[in-house]
Image (cartoon, rainbow, N blue to C red; front, side, top):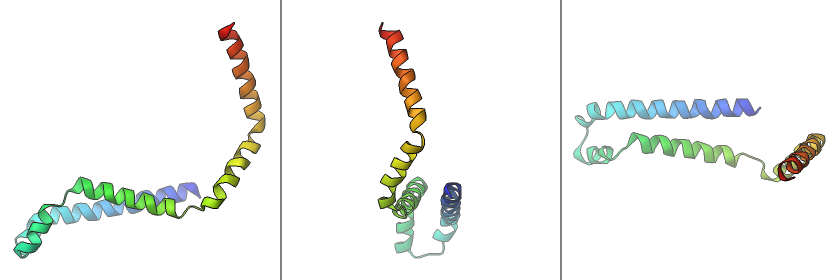
Length: 102
């Protein structure tokens, strides 16, 4: 499920950037056929800012879909599942500390 959401995020980001790049590439051609008021608006468009804004907007949308009340339960479950590994890692850290500081 996580991989699917990551791939969905990057596919929408890629589509948005390609659409912005197409609009950015067509801007010089379109600027000959539009009024001066619209031309002055499009001269201030920066592709880098547009791509960063698109990425941040998609990130906020993805974070907004998270179930925030479920996160503490998942963290506790993750620690409980790996409890034995944490015990071994702490035992290894204590032994390494004794060897280093003795």
